[in-house]
Length: 470
Image (cartoon, rainbow, N blue to C red; front, side):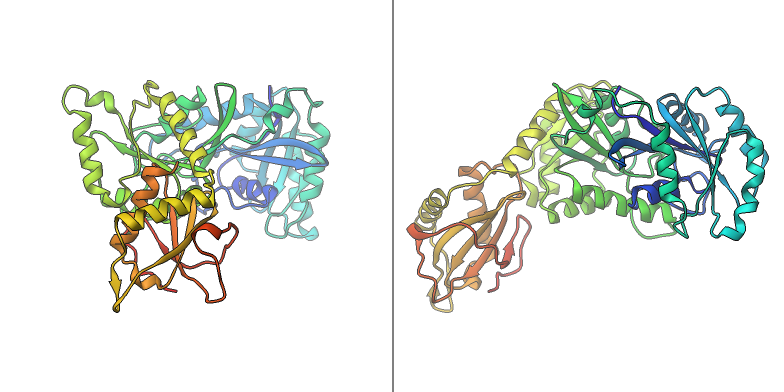
């Protein structure tokens, strides 16, 4: 059964997403004056008075969606109500009781779980009387709140906890930390939401041929081989510039935030479409964040027999030359073909990014590399590496202490990264490399190098870096 769910429902534009963010103390759902912004169910783990539950945001009941997704949105709302332990029925005290509120109340009449009527936008005590008319809806005690004035939050949460069912033994399993958080990113219509539904084995996300169906970044918990994971479905991106809406702005920033907080990133491509500028911008951002990732070529069933996988592999390698370390997977998200293998490989990459290499092993490797291919001469002095140490994980971060960081150009830095990839357990994950000038007071050389120096120096990345500085 898992954790009890507290589901927020109501007509459009009564402030459901604002209440969701307010109760969560986080900016999770998009809040916009435009009606119908929320489509998919969003969830957030809450704890109040030592009681855990999932808060669920839903779309507006009765919305006529501009992309003809009205039925899909209603199905998501109904699925949330069917799984609810408590329902928060949100109304707008400023606008007062409107016919659509009565329609929502009618739909909730036969719900056999507690329903709390939440009068939103009651910003001051003087406005309390405006909410009295909502007693006509027959939902018992009414609570007045205001997200803007931060009014009534604790009282609302107290009411929720009082109405939750007794704790069940299996609730503890829902509180375990996931093994890995996976962000699924890509441009529009690459099959990201379909892939998430396949992982969850449920219609957890709305899917359609309409570009931009997903608007929020949505966390979906799923299990594989008895282990819990989080899949983060993100809005599909489109080319920046032009007359784009606020939703495009929100979508971009939600996707970027999802990449930052993920342990692993799956970058989706449509096998039937050419790589676009949006794909390149997105890959650049993933590389800047040093996230382990996989290039996922989706909808491969549509290309079987008409194009060999080698052609797409070469296409990706030629397009993303600085990300040659990234593995490539060919899947069909709708049927689940190769999906489990992709998740298993992603888990291995995540584990690799968390490994630490001993200083002795690292220095022996650097010494052998330098002897095989000595650094170039800079200002009539050869570059010299005194010792190396790994100072961090996720991503693996290596610092090389040398006589002059300027003596190691980008080409030589890439040579060293290649050596590390070939000989260390970091073959398919990003490596952060720093060059730092050794202080005269530092007596360490290869054999005496130790771990733990975290001072930041000039980075050498998998992308063409600027000349290293001190």
